[in-house]
Image (cartoon, rainbow, N blue to C red):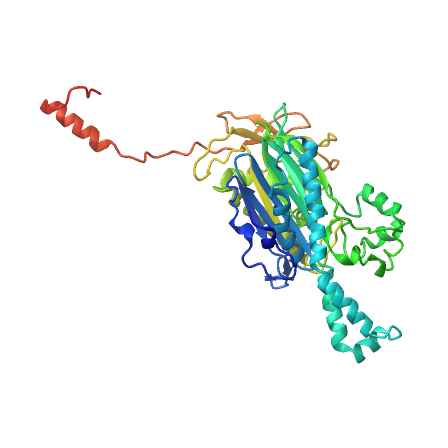
Length: 493
């Protein structure tokens, strides 16, 4: 582990060689990512800005694993800072002697708050420079007059303001001695897929979306004295959409400078995480997915599904069938979402904006996407090296409200037509996918009722494993010795 002097202390320095790069990688997990895209009429794409997502997947020993996804905004500096500092704040001795769930959850909570405090301390020099420059411009000048008279000062102020608005949302998962803990701020999401006693694969959301559609967050903001109706109308909290994050001084220490936030009695945007755990990781747990909001929002935007968690699990299950590595699974899911999003946009004649999820977004644009998948015991028939997992069937079931869902196609995808949307109904919540014991019958099964479900096997035919040593010459020599009567005593096949 590093010393405190080796931990980042300034968020605006480059991180070409991070100390976290030398930590052991968890080989039971994989990461997929895709940078943001602007779509062009000629079909080509380009990045709108450098990627702001960051992630890690670390194995300390057989008892401790740590995973994280960070989704930066207004630059990737805060996400980069939080990534390195978060690992330090959780793993640098803080877990020693902690055995109860509450103690471990408190370690995670304090880690987020410590990262927030360290980041704010790292921008002190820029805050001081900004305050000095603001004093250099007379208060009675209009913005236009100030720019004409002090152009270099105004430009530098704009740069500093942009840097000070840099922040990040985050989701962190800690596995310690067979128990899972998840903490998050903002809209990064954690999904645990596990089978219940009836063989149904349940998709459990272990994170909380801290946005302006969260009634608990709106109530918290209202109690601070903010105008909730105005916030809902603007769908913004100062200069961002999340109600919790790490960093972004402008909606924290500088919130009084914003007219819509000035009435708050304290900082409206906080870094206090939502923490869940500890969840025992038994045989029912299949896999865990951590993602930046670009993953599920891109899928929602393109398909208009109201069961995006289930759709994401189905995409992952489909890739588990065919990919040979966990990184391949995660990357294939991300690539498919990106392709669907682009194709739907192109099918909308490029003149109509894709119906957006609550976050909205510019026309013809997709955000950064990062997905971390940790496998527990879900079968990968083509895994390298081959690894055995329980064989299961996958089928879509009714939603929690009892409404029938769209059938699964032979390729494992939900029914999709170019220019149309996924046909799903039912409430948003815990998603379920039926899991049946594996049989040798690989044919599709259909029930005759109106609630018919369609199944198909996850696993392929057993992969033949060739012998790594050829004994044919040995057996031939034994046979020749037998015929010649020179076979040594004790060798008898």
